[in-house]
Length: 420
Image (cartoon, rainbow, N blue to C red; front, side):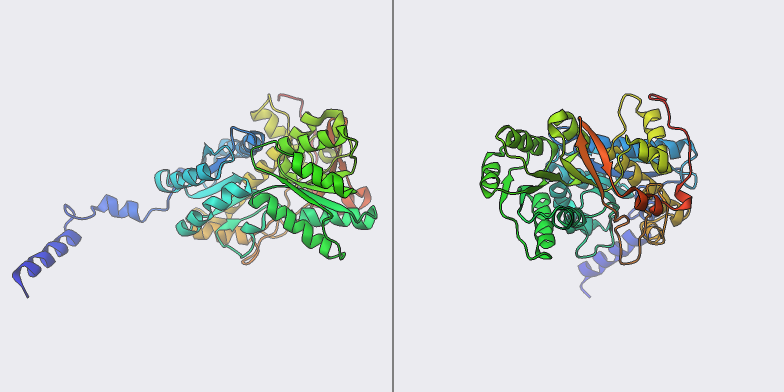
């Protein structure tokens, strides 16, 4: 062996065996630690819209999650660990979401990603999430991108957009006898997913959209789409967008005498749409994946809604309870349940396995939670709400609704006074 090669080999061995040249004992221990987990903390990270035109969605999702996490931390945390939630604003911008995700994984070393908001933003970060093999639990989107093909690290909680649009189409065709249905959508991954879901649902009745119209994310440029749909004479319009653009579409359509039935999927931000439209929004249908917490019926029948209202008013007394915050709250409940089932010897694999053991688990919303080794969507129910006098009303078959509420969901308690 050449002397220089031999000396290099000796140096390499020295680097491996000598603490001064290689990893010392503390560094070796750190290398074996689970990212984001210490003896007393579990660090999770979120990227969502805290500013910009979708800020209501991001802010309320975050606050809903914080309400439950604060409550759990006050009770001692999970297996003695406090949950630390790091959140960054992406303003509903895909590039910023990607940068935030990289920071959360590389710099913040979070254990899991949590409560992201939006399809185009989260889709942009998906390759990085897959490469890092880090769990992402609770996305405020029903897009199929996170459901097909199955991804073990993605844990969805809400029903899908396909399920929402199928429910809407079924209602229009079977119950109302309508067959001229148009689609207005945001021109990105979110809107196109809703368009595809509507097309698939219509195909079951040998129908297709009579017209489609779109707008660019972050704008209120609804004119071309509205004109196309008006010319079609559509009897109903399925809308897949955000509250600002969809509200402008509805306002303008009604000003021009165009009065089809308007339907929006849950991502629209129903409470903010109700605020913008006021009485002008009467009759607009919005499918939901959680029951409206401001409904007295929901509070009276569903202990999970009561629990949310109680805790949300405690930690955010200046805010009104809403469905977006309730969804963030539920995300946090599922996170906590998964951490509990993972045990004190926590790692990412035990966490995913813990989630997969959740079966027929009551959240107190008449919609039990179910996961499995090949099923990472926990909830499937779709609720119908309608705008009336600037507020949301729950539409349902009350007899069936009551039958669906299991005995374990009937835990009762007084509704809290505002600001408690």
